Figure 1 (tube, rainbow, N blue to C red):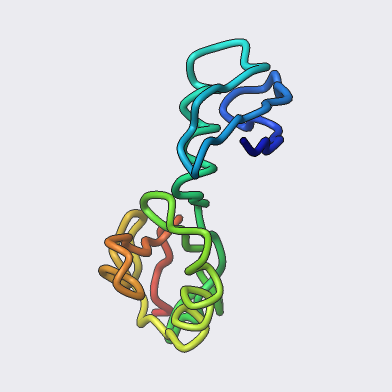
Figure 2 (cartoon, rainbow, N blue to C red):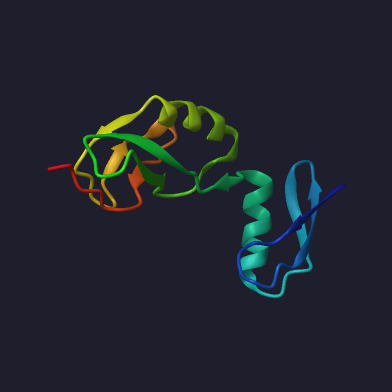
Length: 122
């Protein structure tokens, strides 16, 4: 039996979670105040994911960069690879919020999207 401890980030309560594992399988989650805490703990042990956020360079825009994020949480172990892919990117303005800038980034089934509208310089 192995125990892992986490702080839940599913809601503002920030419950201290203790996950008991038996041969890599979750057998118990303690400390959660709501069902989301148990789901978070199981996910964090099996497939930890994070929303990726950064900026990309913009060519011909009113601003030199545009904020971006992953449309869905990306595998935690791929975040540095995603950062490298985003660092190589330069987008031509205009840009619309929600516009997909990189489809299936680093073979993760996660899209990188614009987080704001950005007009082109006239």
